[in-house]
Image (cartoon, rainbow, N blue to C red; front, side, top):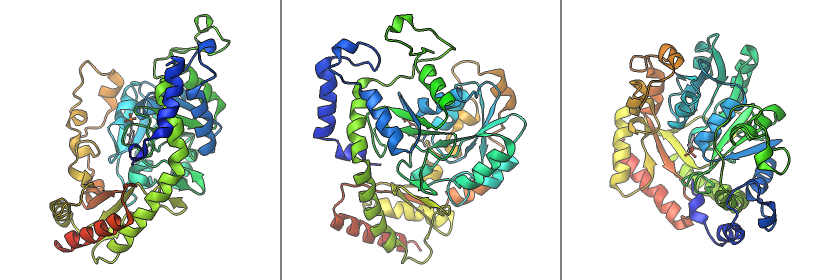
Length: 397
Ligand SMILES: *Cc1c(COP(=O)(O)O)cnc(C)c1O
C-alpha cells in the first residue's frame, strides 16, 4: 500500500497552492483562496473515480466509518456486524456512536463469512460492515442479498482495497456506503484523511453536516448557518486534501504496478506444493496491494513466516498474532478497557469476546501469511524476492 513511495513534485505543487493562499481550511474565506478549493476538488474527482454520486472527505478512515454510520442513522444499541479479521477502527467507529459491534467469523476470503453473518442477525442488527482486508473483497453479492432480506445497511470498509472491483464496480460503491482511508500507509495517502462515498442523497447531506458540527452549509456566511442536527468535527484540512488530489492522479499507475509485481510473485509461489491462495469471490478483482496465501497448518505457517524474515524477505505478515488486526490481539476490546464508563447498551449487549467461539476464523488466520506488494521494486528485485520467498517457504515444508 505504497502511496508514500510516489510522493513527489505533484503533491508539493498542490500543497504549495494552499500555502500560498494561506487558507488551510476547506470552508469559507472565499476572497483569499485564489480559487483553490482542494477538498471540494478532491471530492468531485474521487466520487467520479469511484462511480458514486457523492463523496465526503473527512479526517481519517476511522472517522469516515463513524460518519458513514451516523449518516445512515446508526446509534446507541444498534448492532453492527463486523469481521474478526480487520483493523481496530472497525469496532472503534461503531462504539464511538454507542452502537454495538458484533464480531463474526471470516472464511477463506479472509473477510466476512456470509453464513456466519446471517446467524448473527438479531432484531437489533442495523448494518453489516464487511472489511475488504489486504486488497481483496468480501462476497458482496451474498452480503447484499442478506441485507435485502433483513432490511439492513451494507457499509463497505474499502480502506485496504481501493481500486479493487466487484462485478465491475469499484469496491466501496457496491453497498449503501463505502469508506476509505488515506493514512500514511494506504495505497494513496494524504497524510491523514478519509472518505465516505454513497449514492444516497440523504446520507450525503447527513455526512456533509455531521462531519462539520451539524452546519447546514447553506449560503456563504458560516456564522449564519443553522444546525439541522447535532454533529461533530471530523473535517479534513485543505493541506491534506491537496496531497490527495495529486495522489488520486497516480492511483491507476499504482494499481498497474501492484498487479505486475503481485503476478510475478504469485506465479512463483504457485509452483510450491502445499501453498494455496486466498479465495477471491466470483466477480471480484483485487487491488493487488497484498499477496495472501495459506500454509497447510498453523505450525508450518509460523515456521514459514520465521523463515521468510530470517532470509531477509521484508514485509511479510502473520496477522494471527498481530496486535492490530485480529481479535486475539485485542485484549482491550475483549475486556472492555475504557477510560470512562461505556454506554449501557454496549455493556449489556456486547458478546463475551473472551469466550466466543471463533475457531473458524482461527483455522484460516493461523495459516495465513501476507506479503505486502511495493511498487518501488525493480523487476529484478521482485523476481529475486519471489525466489527468496519460495526458497524460505520450501525450507519448512
Ligand atoms: C487504515 C484502516 C482504517 C482506518 O483508517 P485511518 O485513516 O488510519 O483512521 C480502517 N479500516 C481499515 C481496514 C484500515 O486498514
